[in-house]
Length: 342
Image (cartoon, rainbow, N blue to C red; front, side, top):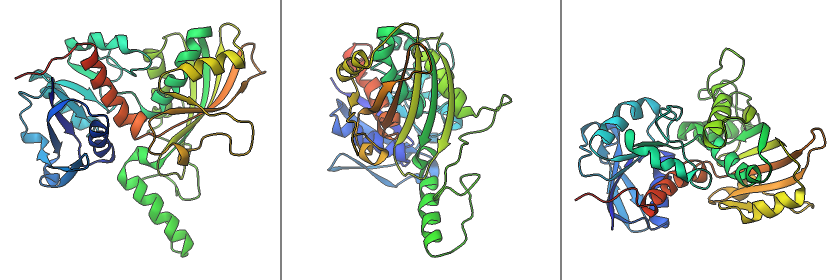
């Protein structure tokens, strides 16, 4: 049993990571098609160690006969072409923000809410959550099962790769410019990103939060529990790959550090690395290229009746995007929710 798979946005950082992840995890494919905008037609992208795919134009591609489409082209492009693919009978797994909060589109992290996949048939679209949300709910799920999460206060430290290749180039070029005493002109960010932290991701909303901060709250409630209160401060930091989060959780009932440690050690997708010594924790550099959500610095929060604090790190291009999308495809296959078409 093998599928015809299309990767939309194949020339972008996430698209390339999706192709790499499909090959690494030996997802059952009989054919993989790389799609992007017309200006990328003919560009070659790698699929595994030996295969090279030539990019085709998304605008002209007929999805009839394609089983699964993994989208990561930008929300406005997904808005046009994801429904077109779904109407052709394809199952769309969309990595953009376009469909996440639509009530009839499942928002899925396979380690957290795989049961939601059963609702995909109505639209044939499944949404991949925001990268910062994914890693947080993977870490929260085993704790929520013990004591129910009541409130989350989170500060994120998000790498520039979350804003795309141009943002990564800006960090590199600004860093070089500072070393040679050249002027730095922000283009991708509102302030210089080299040797700086910017507490501003996505646009500002009327209440003073940014859209990224709203996403973390709204998506956590949709995925994990509608009664959880979340307040986030999302910060862009001068790191190329990997998001980190300082998470403070208030629970409805008592939970000890020992209970939390045991639950996290047994949780799928989580690696607990927590030695109370110099370097006994995971940083973004450590997590880059890895699949796990890493939890460190686990400790009691004495400022609330039932509280824990922890540090959470993951590769935003892998678990925060490409890996989660491929895991959704794997879960559809394993649950028998899709069959290859001939």
